[in-house]
Image 1 (cartoon, rainbow, N blue to C red):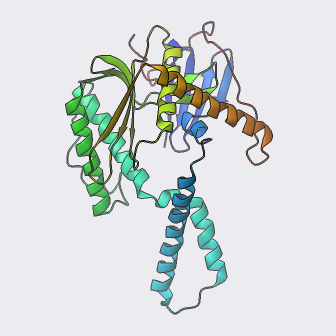
Image 2 (cartoon, rainbow, N blue to C red):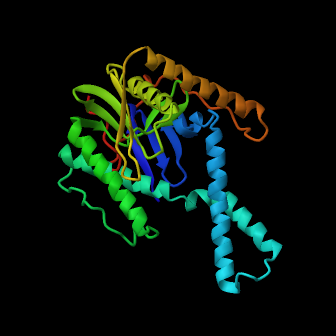
Image 3 (cartoon, rainbow, N blue to C red):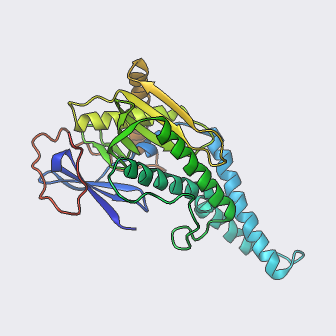
Length: 311
């Protein structure tokens, strides 16, 4: 998968995002080259999630069960199993359980549908995404009928969202970066939401979790750092169920909760910084802080670079 390149800060910085590895690198001409910065989602991982441990263990076991089933179908249910095979299955489960989880794939399809549907409604493209979504041997080679049905349930909920609220996108899936704090991330949507400037992110989880507000507040912070004459008035968290359930939309206006949510996020950043300096398992170089980019010179523009916010 190719690296996506985007101009930030009026061309004074360039972000190279490797979609496969989810790694951000930044270049500021005359200042720094190929600077790695941690992502918002990585920083929020500092918040303990006991339920996630149990879920990950179950997903790993499902990999082992599948390998066991493959073995039994080949050699018979009563065949002896070489312990070396079990070791291989456990190692495979440890490394690849995320790839066995279909929710990530369904979520990716739902996000892509939302992106294209909103672009069409905003007249940014003449191509309306097809609904219902059809099986595609190239884009969705491992999709089962049940997974395709789940993806279509998610797409139908997205249409309901766009029908209910008036959305005018300014940035969609465009990286943001805080050179003064040393972190980055990509919102699904920044634009006018029922007439007010908002940041919005789609989820495909069981429910809307509290840490999502920390994510949205950090995205607001980065957007306002790059565009200091703009103020995010709303933060919108959207959960698009994969089982056809009702859409969940929660909105927080610009009030004291925004500052509290932002403090929570910066606390995660502080823990992450401490962890890299003190935990041998997670040790790494300190996150580099560049500082304000007012004096950085713009890069020479390339046609391949994404357009900036039209403010």
